[in-house]
Every structure is written in C-alpha cells, then in structure tokens.
Length: 194
Image (cartoon, rainbow, N blue to C red; front, side, top):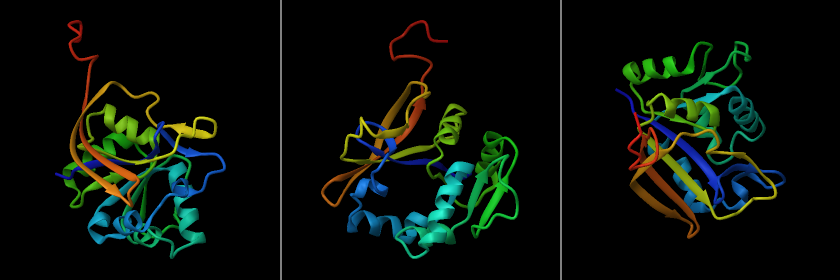
C-alpha cells in the first residue's frame, strides 16, 4: 500500500502565494533547492488538480532547467480534471477524469510508489477529509503576506490533530514540519462528538 503525503509551502500566516511576490517568496536558498532536487525526494508520483497542472507545466515549459522543474517533469504525475483534454503536453502525466478520492484510494492500494500532492489545495482538502492522507508536510517561509496573500490553505478544513514526526531547518530560515494527521469530529474533550 502506498503512502500519501500532502506537501505544501506556506507563508507564516497560512497563504499558498501572494500577489507581486516571486516564487518561494524569493527566499529559496541552496539548502532548500538541493533538498527539492534530491533524488530521494523525487521517488514518488505527484498528484495535482487542473489549476496546478496548468501553472506547473507552464513553468516547466518556460524554464525546464530550473531547480525542481526538471525532476518534476521526469517523475510520474497524475492530474485530476474534467476540463483538461488529452493528450497532455507535460511529459509523464496521466489524466484522470473520474472521482479523485476514489482514484487515489485505488492508487494507494495498487501503486508501487509513494504518492504526494503538489499544490492543489482543494484536492488535498478532499483527500484529508476522506481519511487518505498519511503524512502532512509543510515548509513554512518566514513572511507574513496579510495584505497580498492569496489562497488561504486551511480555509474549509476540518479540525485536525497533528503529531510531529519530523522537522528540519533549511538555510537558517525555512522550517519543514511533517505530521501524521488525525481528522477530528470536534475539539478535543468535546463530549458531544459522535
């Protein structure tokens, strides 16, 4: 059975991106970029929705040699979409039109490689709600983008308890936090939970 990791990069205040800021908020350093390019970090299948596919495949086409993009192009990818049409132009990408939760449930049972989401906030949320996420990994970038931030990552999430299983500091400023998530029926100690 394959493990599924939700993989996110966020600002300290929980945004996935911010208007006018460069990628990685301009804070990617050599240690973080080396980790992204490490073959051990890329021995998985990436799962994404159509919006992330359009964005990332566009980046890969514009700058194929940029850190992380060549590795992402080479790895197997599954995109869940009703709007994309085949053939997909990004190498090593399979299109799935059906229910993403059911498709990922089947992939977890039969796929030989670990699975990881990339971006795709609504996909990650639906997989967490379905109880399919084994690990939740966040890299926190030390910026607050309250005025320009977009795509609040945790909006619409249930209550989730997180058990820290790994942490790491990159370049003296980026914090990786990896958790085992448990979706809760309500706040801990709430006797009315069903």
